[in-house]
Image (cartoon, rainbow, N blue to C red; front, side):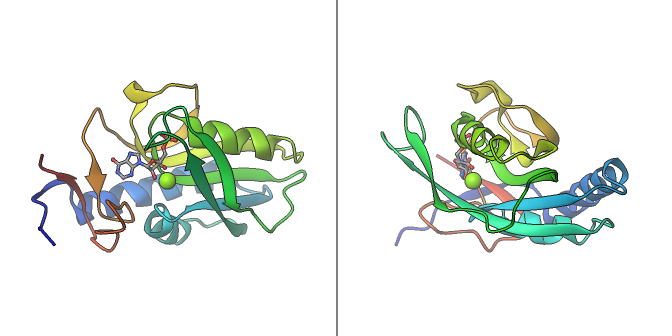
Length: 174
Ligand code: IMP
Ligand code: MG
């Protein structure tokens, strides 16, 4: 297989510093509250694993996986669960932990579905926010890094299931 050329966008150290800050912000905001943190598989798995270790509230943890059908990426595609949550969320505060909010279709779907289960609140925490690419509105309560363009890999993010294990985030050089 031909090797892609990768360019560093966020180093492992930059990511760890930012994740620590996000953990502190979330911990301060949710003191004394009943919280469920939901990891959106697969892309957010490393972000989630690092983030929850900087959370000093008693949060429950759960996982979902979304699948989108349609033309290539999520554009015009329909989003469905390929794995739903297992914990009840009624009267709890949900924090959705996502790798990238891009067009917004995935988070738009997930927040809509979860809002019907009677949670106190739903907040999206995204490591990367490509706000300028939004096609449907999504409010990102906690955003790690704003990014304008480029396809990113590493730290959980993949291209054809490659590069998820890298500890930094890279752009594939076209
Ligand atoms: P959406 O377009 O906001 O629905 O984003 C759908 C998903 O596409 C994100 O959760 C990511 O998993 C994936 N995605 C979007 N941009 C990138 C990227 O630059 N690299 C890897 N995955 C991406
Ligand atoms: Mg994702």
